[in-house]
Image 1: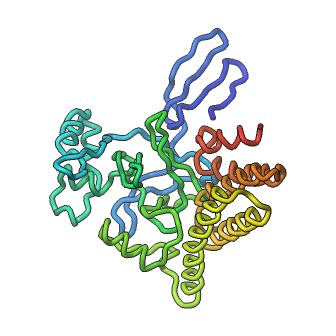
Image 2: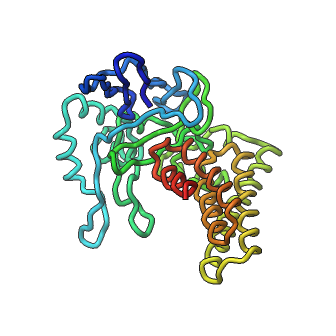
Image 3: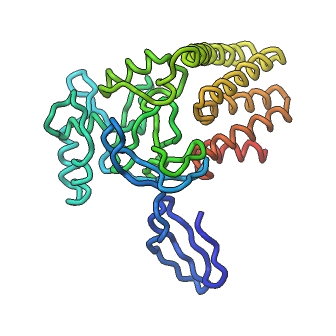
Length: 331
């Protein structure tokens, strides 16, 4: 992602935007600080404490941030209860450099964990899940200096994912973002949810009600949105059921047509609700795989290409999904 240089060699970014690896034609190489500024700033957000805002126009699919965590924790089993090991957290924070420790304590704390900041309160308020257990519950989580500053929106303009191989959280623009706009992620599951469900989930865990553009709708606009969300919920169940039937009963042209029709409807509704297309990545990939298995090679390639575009936009060309889809298309 670095710039190609005409006379002295070329440069390659580490993905963070902070340093670049410069390679010279005589074989030497060196890591140098990049003069490229990050495309965001942290400043007050109306009614939401601090937030992260675009300092220039950011294009869809552009990497906004790649950040290693300040602290990571794995849940442990203690007396029949699965919990976060707070003693381990204390040790990890104590081992941070003074600057990094200050960044940790500068993070916000939800009022449900007390007025005075505590290690536990900061952790419970800010920790992002980076690995799930087999039952879908959080198994490993991490706290980040910048990523934890992104506020929530039910209609987020960012997509973020954990890169296990690099130990970093990467954040990409899910759409074109104008200068001055707040950069947001979702704190909720990436699926259809009615407004009351979204508000209840956010208040229960984070003690706030959402006022994003999706939640602020009223009248007929809200009714249409709620119908679309209800349909998205139902579509996920229907797609799951068709997928199960395909596994159990084999593939027929009718079942494949049913699957693709449901997925196309879901993709259309995501667009109408202004939700990230990355939320439909798995469904497009499923259509590609099932089309390939049914012998519909042209349809398989078309769906794989659309899925690859979603993966590229959501995670860049190093995203595991994108790499897998490129291999699928090359086969």
